Image (cartoon, rainbow, N blue to C red):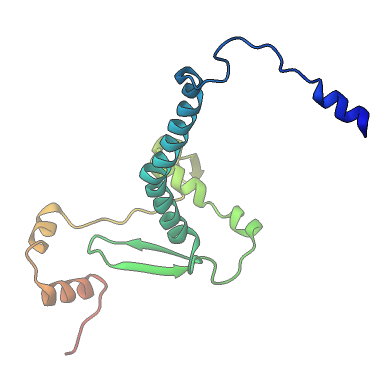
Length: 164
């Protein structure tokens, strides 16, 4: 249309201050800051967070992977005892009635043992049972045992004998 052509022909540039369209270093500061910030975040991720992520992944695999329905303990001879967590499928309610929490607390803090009277005895009545251990001299002798002596010694402690 001729009217539009006439309007376009009569267009004049808007007045602007001199040098408005030229490149200035001050205009690059925000862009340069943003690029440096992104580079710092990416390098921090690869330098620090990847190591932490590997550690967390390994811990997760150790704690949450594989067979988890067992408990273990070690003794003074570094023998490992393993048993299923709940081999008889006891309910949580029946396990909660057992005094294991009280026994652990009494072991940690003996003053928590309740005083009871049973017959002629009045005194602390503990949920735990302590077994006597070998004296220090006996333990020191065992430090020099070789494998066969250790095997025989552990069996003897359990009241067993080896016929071989």
